[in-house]
Image (tube, rainbow, N blue to C red; front, side):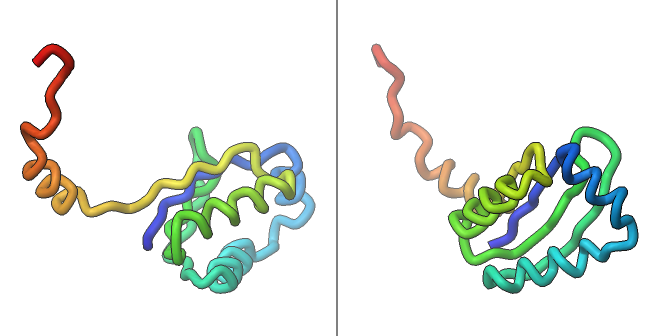
Length: 107
């Protein structure tokens, strides 16, 4: 399964960057993805609302959510949002088959 992860560093995480600006975080994240049975697709550091955007393959959303909890526990992140990549065409086809199944109250 493919996921997009959006994250904001905490002060503690930012302090860590400043103390070790040459540390290869991409290699660390790639190794981490492999340890959970996944694969790092891409990592980008960004300006704006989020500090980092990661594309990753993982065995399941539960696996990635468990990893999120352990990452937040370190204190390095203020926020981590996990978005699941979907096939909207397949979902729309299923939705089209369901049109008319639900009736609003009073109808």
